[in-house]
Amino acid sequence: MTLRTGYPDGAPCWADLNTPDLDGARRFYSGVFGWTFDEPVAEFGHYTTARLGGRSVVGMAPKMPDQQDLPSAWSVYLKTSDVDATVRRLEDAGGKVMVPPMEIPGQGRMAFGFDASGAAFGLWEPAAHTGAQAFDEPGAMCWHEVNTRGSGKTDAFYRSLFPYEQQQIGDGEKFDYVVYHLGGAAVGGRMQMTAEWGDIPAHWMTYFRVEDAEAGAARVREHGGKVMHGPFDSPHGRIAVVSDPYGAIFSIIGPAPAAAS
Image (cartoon, rainbow, N blue to C red):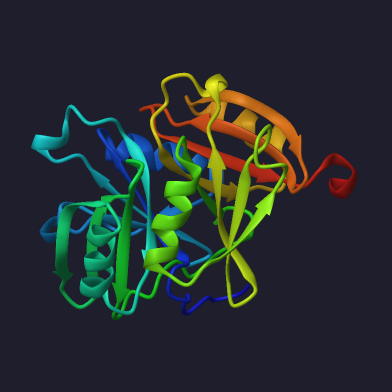
């Protein structure tokens, strides 16, 4: 059992969920991934940490009264050593700040905003809280990608924030996907959305690893969620796009059938 203690600048290091029903969400995700939960902290808006084998994996919080009209969603946080400087680069590159840098006492500093194409994401400057302690194993998040209709603008935006090396996958037209690397390691991706996506806005997608995609999709349904697409095969495994009972969308990925056998 590996305990992860840090992330490089620019890597997704944390994700959290805002939900209209914290108790219901905890029951759902416990059933799907086997998570346990810390007691919600009232002074932090009843924020709670989900754990896998005692290690932190994600956070959850109930919607605040002024957030009731917002959709329930997962949010990704990119690690930074200097949230103030990164926010300045974000604004210079055409992004917008929704939550300016703020202190989470004893844990770190955060900010939240939108990239140049309108996808929301967070920034996290760690103190005691260094990010998810379990990563890329069944029950933990394993990948994040930004889905956008402005691929060139989006790639340039994130390059202005962090020193990503961006690797083109596909022909850049029929299939336009870019992998973001830091120090030679893949940390995230960017997908160009096509007409098939309809009116879905730009967004970050969080992937959680499972031992078997079919079984994971079945657990989603069993506990009141929906399977929106898949499971389907990809070069990296078998994927399903799903939602929890309150509409928050995420993806699960398991090994390809041959690899699983």
